[in-house]
Length: 290
Image (tube, rainbow, N blue to C red; front, side, top):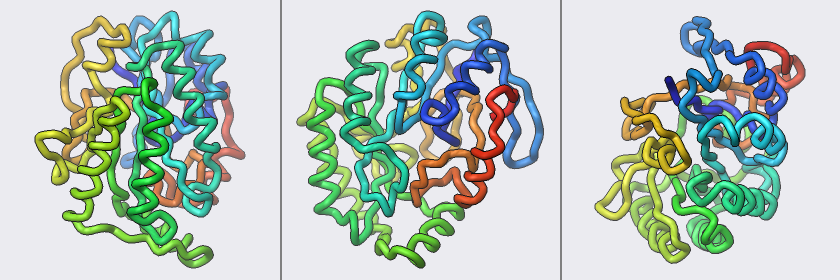
């Protein structure tokens, strides 16, 4: 038995719901290791899957699949990102008002443990300075009060893909990205923790343990405790350790890099927009591969 992550590499609920429905009908998915190109076949039948964790910025296209194929057969919850940044930073993301309403609807239907809000990453720039984040985060937190009980945050991490995409953005539309000092990050997170608490949420940090305190703990994005609260009866164990500070339990991710069209410049999962366009154009929802 296992937990399936769908997916931190791409947005399956927003863009690949038909493919996911077909894979559930067939009971398996083929996954290619991005580092050694090795192929593996993974069962996603109810006999072999403990639960699903879905990652998204837009769950609306996925709702028919959720009601028809998931809710009566599998425990699940969503990692749902809402940041509300300007379009030059998040080119094709849905309006945050729509995303907030989706979260509230999911919470009303499935309970407050069914959604974790991600304000992730915290992107500092001339367009989104500290004052912007304080106003923006507090606004979103207040609108999500009562719908979620956890918000997960982290600061932009400069992976190679992120550096490349930021450089391309700066060439055509300068935004003045800044990587704040550790002391400034700690001050920001402490403020956000208090703001989140005012809206009835705990704040957790995704894989940035150097910012943790006695009041601000690390996040388990694939969280055994949360899964038990949404109906997973299996005692889940084992640590994923994807990155330093990762507290996730073991899971299998079924996504693919370079397949998400949201166009976020800070994304670690997209090497170039041209690769994404090719992937979307060539996508076959009947294929065992995403």
